View 1: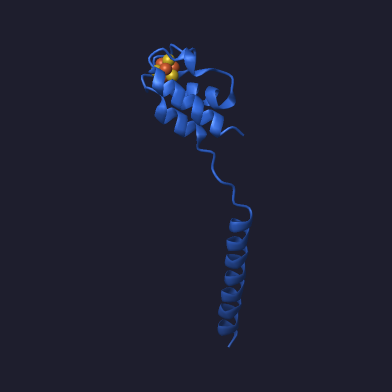
View 2: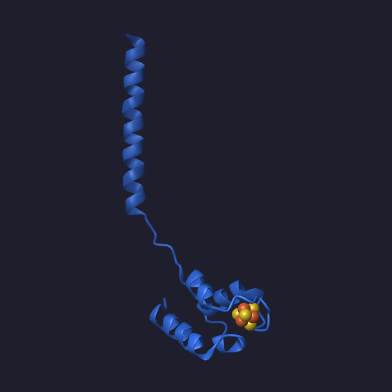
Length: 93
Ligand code: SF4
């Protein structure tokens, strides 16, 4: 009898914790910021460092932070530069 009571108590506690975590996960959900990944996908990907950043990932971070301009990337084509500028203008914080 004591074992059945203990198992029932563990099931109830487990269900309550699961319910709490499910509600907390939905209530405190923060949408991920994909701007750096999106800009990185648009950059040439040569990682040449010509822009003064440590590779294209560094350039993408600097562009999203606003500490750099896409014009510093010489290998980037003009239409892609405009695409990046438009994306950053539309996805400003
Ligand atoms: S200059 Fe352009 S291709 Fe070279 S690392 Fe910077 S962003 Fe990448």
